[in-house]
Length: 586
Ligand SMILES: Cc1cc2nc3c(=O)[nH]c(=O)nc-3n(C[C@H](O)[C@H](O)[C@H](O)COP(=O)(O)O)c2cc1C
Image 1 (cartoon, helix red, strand yellow):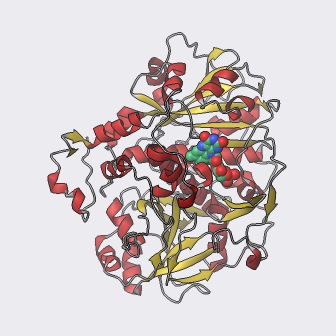
Image 2 (image 1 turned 90 degrees about the vertical axis):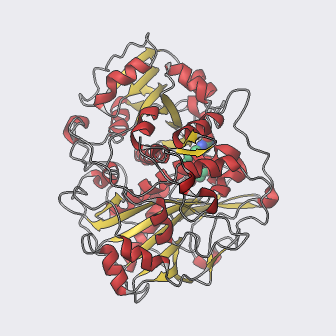
Image 3 (image 1 turned 120 degrees about the horizontal axis):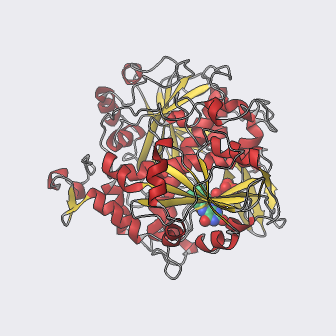
């Protein structure tokens, strides 16, 4: 098993104190992670540790760096007609040149506000990327060349969603920029994500670390999908370690004050004009010398404190964050050849659709309740599921972002899919795992393929029957799990993945669930229905439902169906006219 290391410059985390994989009290990093997961399970009679919300310390959803110059991005005109289905057809969108306008579209479709909602005296914003509890722990960054209208020199910027602007945190010497980007195709730039664990912990207590990772996965997918709308590629720099991410995003700079909550490094990704060969062969790491120059740079701005005080701290979150700290190292490429091709998955290929990409992306919303009547066609169901399966050429969007085979499979509760019997189903996203998953599940499951299912979509009926009440029960009693057309559990090949890739890979598995969730959200919009992520589920009852052995874990749930709108809410536009945006957090 790989050894991960704790952060090099934190006195609490002196790596020299690690014995092999040991971090604390003789426990390996993997043991710490598995113990965290175990103790943050929700049980029907005992939820993971949290306290009642203290409204006086509700975290501000908007981080700003006072003293860093903010440049507002020009709001893109609404009404781009690019069809949604085209996002998934490699090479079909002519790459836009990088400019302040195209950059603005990139952030608008990925991380911007999409609406303000008002109910009586309360106002809150919603974004292109979803977030558990709408708490938005994820912060976005861009490392950009000199750009007309933005800045005359290369620089590192923090994205400010409320203003749809970029705060310049560090100007880069042109030589440092060139050295940083030397190995990458010309016209490329970098984006990064970090998480403020406190935002989620404020509401969800110890389970919050899981939710931060889901949200990071959603945000990564939102950026990938946005890039696709511009004809750009987005590739995770999977070899970059957390210290490098931290240095490049300046996460230790401007948050030194007592009160500003720390941002934890998540990831870096490369954005390139599309390449005919996809992301194969791109470097996945960063050179060291320019990073040293960046770390020694003159950073601008001081982070705001998000809460006036922190009543509850959760040491176990800091512990799992340390145990999953990633060191930079290259991984061997995985063999994608057993995965299906696009034309084996989609029968027929999807080359038409209902909506524009913009309508789907900016219109995405979570259903707060489902109507318990809407059904969908089996063909629609198959298409949604096929979008979740990476193809063997490694070019299926958004899975082309991550150079790894799937670790997540689905256990489905099918309620209202026309042409399919209701019941429990499994979708095995990696055909090489059918046997392993079937032997990990209940022996009585029948593992029958629906006759209408495309041959390469490994969908199996496990047991026929009405599972609406069961879906609700295991989803913390949330009716949305039974009132939709289907709901599902994302089941991870958990122990084997952590053994193969180390403790830090715990975060990657959660990101994969977030990416899958983002696809489901958009596919639901395109199909005229709606989805909702479900982070609140009872872990062990789900495992019992499918009969899963300890090596497999359900990490995230989802529901898709006909939404019921909450008519009591007023919807306001996200930015226009700009000056009239509600001053909820000003
Ligand atoms: C990781 C995650 C977990 C979530 N869990 C639940 C849940 O258990 N129940 C629920 O009703 N909504 C859940 N949601 C939906 C969020 O409440 C929703 O994304 C948020 O309020 C923002 O609204 P929007 O998705 O319409 O932008 C979850 C969303 C995410 C991303």
